[in-house]
Amino acid sequence: MSPRRAACATLLLLLGGACDAEDPAAPHVAGGDPRRGHAVILEAGCGACHVIPGVPGAVSWVGPPLMEWSRRGYVGGRLPNAPENLVAWLLDPRSISPGSAMPALGLTEEQARDAAAFLFTLGATRLPPVPPGMQLGPQEGGPREAPRLRPRG
Ligand code: HEC
Image 1: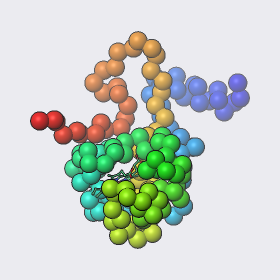
Image 2: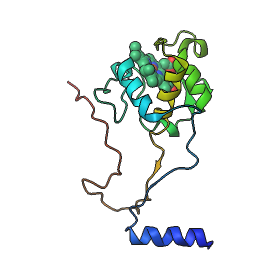
Image 3: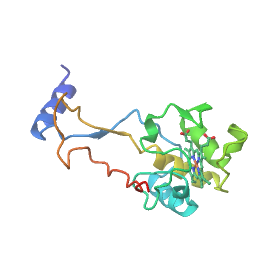
Image 4: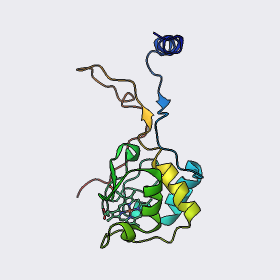
């Protein structure tokens, strides 16, 4: 075991395994700021059509839910889910998927970069593995707040 790995394993032991880290492999959106992106998403009203964890009121099922975004394989079922492709999608979905039900929302390039940076934080936290068969307590599902879904009815 390398000294670095050994140090990490010791840390994990000391913290009772509750050590989670931003995945260094999580895509980085050049020039994008996730905190500004959260505000952009709120102001643009993305939550009128999407479930987006951490965004108040974003509980709609008109479009696909955006939870765990960084783990998705494709954007709009057309392009590999890479930062520049997501930015392009947010600027003009129909230029990528003609006839898509998602309209262009008039975002500036900077706003699209910020919103994309926020989306790539979703699902980017590595959780410690849960041993098979282990029961999870109420606070043990991971640090991310569960999306508040609107009840059916
Ligand atoms: C009027 C409803 C509507 C609004 C508002 C809207 N979207 Fe969408 N969005 C959709 C629909 C419908 C799709 C699925 C379109 C498709 O796959 O062609 C979609 C797809 C997406 C996708 C790709 C999803 C996937 O699974 O590949 C992303 C990312 C996305 N939207 C982000 C956003 C963001 C960020 C905003 C706000 C800036 C936003 N959307 C606003 C309706 C909307």
